[in-house]
Length: 305
Image (spheres, rainbow, N blue to C red):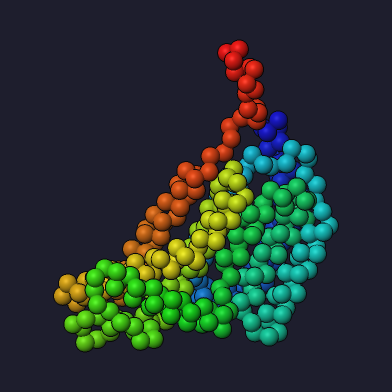
């Protein structure tokens, strides 16, 4: 049945009229973004949003991963797709009118939702919706919101790192976002770039992606994984700052300075991934899902055995 369904879908998408409509929509998309593409590219090349280049490949992977959920009925397009495309067009016009370029990637989500709905109908949209939702991570945060988050993350990272450093037995005190270490004249400054905003956005994308990949897991487990993005990002940043403070305490000032500004960001990713893997493992150890629907054995049956 699944093979027959895939054959139906393949033959449907290879129809000349479907290919022509898809080509027209994609040409319209490329023509619409020809002027704003350099601005979007500059946003994605910034250190905080470089992960955006991996969003589309991961969306394709999600579609492949959910290939067993492709509808068994013959595909039929829906005119409701035009409504999503209309929203996309309005967002594109608004972006050009008020020069708010962040609406451009946000509009992409509505375009691909309309694309799937117009060509493949509601069945195609139900199959592809995780990949379409994940495209939201191509949207950079508005500058004001990013600034507010970064300020709060700076304060949280500085305060939590001070406690962690003190727990390691290193005398430390905090003034604002500066951590003063015993024997060090220059404080360890948790700057804007070190606030952990980059890790927060990255781990949100990773945790949401993990919740889509682990689609066989219970809903509550996937919600916990998504919600853990914030503490994992903060913990990774605290680990980086605390490790740098320990280097300064061991009189490795030059190495610590280079590590804090150049190499520590590379360490935060595997550390955070290890924490996420440990969390998923722990969740599966805490709750054991029943493997059988049979009820408990009665006392009479047990005695007969």
